[in-house]
Image (cartoon, rainbow, N blue to C red; front, side, top):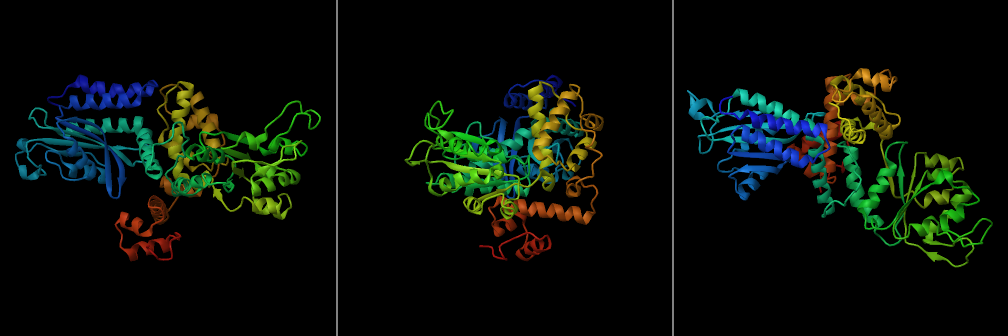
Length: 527
């Protein structure tokens, strides 16, 4: 590659490798790597742009080098024509997912074969940075030179493709996280709270969950005497995470979150544990105790495994959920409390009522505001993202870096049913990192050593379309279409019209898709 600074190009790659081997500042490393790559290519102008939305295309500049005015950068982000830059190249790269090269026309024997560049006399390289797990374009790197010596050719395209692939492998999770934070800021209208938990996933279910939490359930916690919220889901689906998320994003986040395992509450001590007691009110009451409700005053009380409460213990809670008052053991006067109650269970409560294991009047007090979490086998689209998240978590915890999964190992993990859901997946990755050799791939042999039954289990049929395996072309296409339309509906808050327009489909065609794919709509209305 003529005119290249190989020391700078090597430095660009070394910065990425340093992130894999240390827990250094990723933003600083990305900036240093990008600047070294731009200098190595002799770029007069360089942009690193995050893809924030595709329909319509919306970009955000992460790093900018060269003589570019702020208004020029903003125009690039909006996809508008900019003097001296080629946004059309950026658009083509994002749409096609392939690296774009426009050679300097001054070096062409037949300049008519080269796409025109406004102003002429320069060459452009633009490469997509993909999510290594799903292949989605997350960002683009744009380089532009104006000298004959620095003009780009096919060898440069090959090197930049490898560089962009490495950036995607190292920073793919970071780019997705930045985009999700932007979506949350738009929902909240304010910055994301510090140390707030994340609900990870790109499936339609998880997108709908995040939106419902912010538009319905979190505002309900801010009301006076808030209605109880019920979280339903199999073990390991993340019910406790949803409760912590509700607390962190509500106005109650500066007040306590009190967690109670209802399976540990005995009949004899239920009233005392929930409502507190005065010293000497019963044998063993040596001090005043506030109880769970008063301890959570102003905040959130999480009653986990609520269906494990005995009928007698349930009776103690009916009145407080109705009147928001308690009577501590040993007192006669009612005390008003300001507590948002969130309950969770993995049991079928309707069946528990029929079997007289759950009081009907108790169930009636919290059944109306319910959040239902799907098991992981019903949303395999989220598995690659969760695997990436837990890879980073456990590698930091163990202070050991791996190269991630081989394609065959990744397919096995996505195809697995995960009966223990996200909790099982997190524990599995902990084993993978503990037993992996530093700097090595996590391959099928390691999966077999850590979880012998994983690859022998029957594959999840719903994972076929995600993998493109075990499904007919028709089934795979339908699964993708359904997930895409549902995701777009969630992105546009259920607006059929906005979702249809974002996909560029005529009204009749869009509604035909919804009917064919059995997607609930608005009865044909686009209001």
